[in-house]
Length: 153
Image (tube, rainbow, N blue to C red; front, top):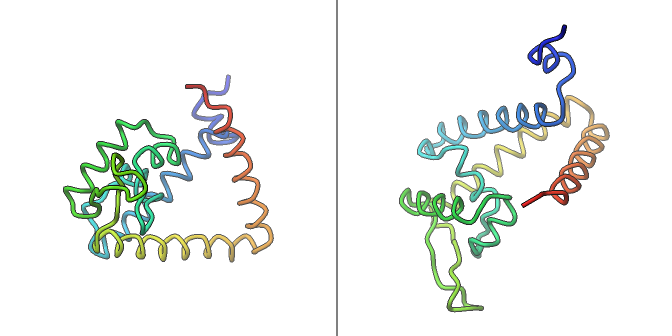
């Protein structure tokens, strides 16, 4: 009888593959960010940082984009504010709402993360071939959108 560990080694399912990819990308990204002076960040902060925009984003939008609950995003924004990466300010379009905006440190981190992720993707595109990588990424985007559309709340 094949164990789950053996099955996951020889024929991993989509969840196992997605998890392995996520953790490996996070490990590389956050190690390189730490080497550039952003060692106070953790992978959990990616739910906010990956969607943060220079002009600011509402927490409710961060929740929708990341797929995380509003309470989780609120806690992460609190942490990032304490660390000096973001600040909350009134949304000019709706004074009752707040925008989560990057600080100068936050902008520096976003630039570093973009550079690191571009290099990581470029490495895989060279390894697989640009056309094969483009097909892979297109298929992964499609599967991700389809799966997120089936989300049960």
